[in-house]
Image (cartoon, rainbow, N blue to C red; front, side, top):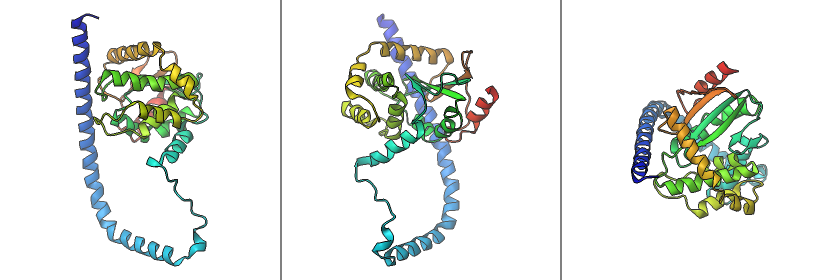
Length: 277
């Protein structure tokens, strides 16, 4: 690659990150407006809620030791990791995986999901609309989702390649989506450079059934770099500058850009998928 091409590529990455930040700010402002509206409703019920809390405290204090036997003690581990693993396993466990794809290979509709593992808006999608789509369409064999790589939030290209490769390497054991979801569920604060080798190793250890020796060896597969480059080219061809971005279509046929209204409400995704089914 010539110096000019490298400069153009670096500029494209910078522009993509700036546009992604602008999109996130717009979403954050819209969410802030919603929060203000909700606060008015919350304030109306705050007094009643306080009374309920006092009553509950009194009941617990006077119920004696025998009444606590049915309560489950929270696991004493950093970050509530067992709970996160349980949530992710419940979400994707039992669904066919093949590399970066979640869902039956015979699913009539395919969605390509372009994401950056450090993108906080991708996390909004992961915790918002995605679980409902997986439950309604992927688990029932109607939709398969392909995870594609697009650098937007991650500051350093090398860090981006390393973290995305870690997820793709888990895909060699049909565990890419377990790793991806664990990453998003435990995502750090953007710009804090929290992604290091210890962080990636911890996610691997949390991934149920992942053979760590094979995963470590798979991370050295040079083909993943080509995959990441190809994904970036596909995103550029589709006109994508931010993450998450989506292409949707009937399996094996040309795909179109999916215009969503919300990343937490699955309605716009459902409408687009239903039209293709």
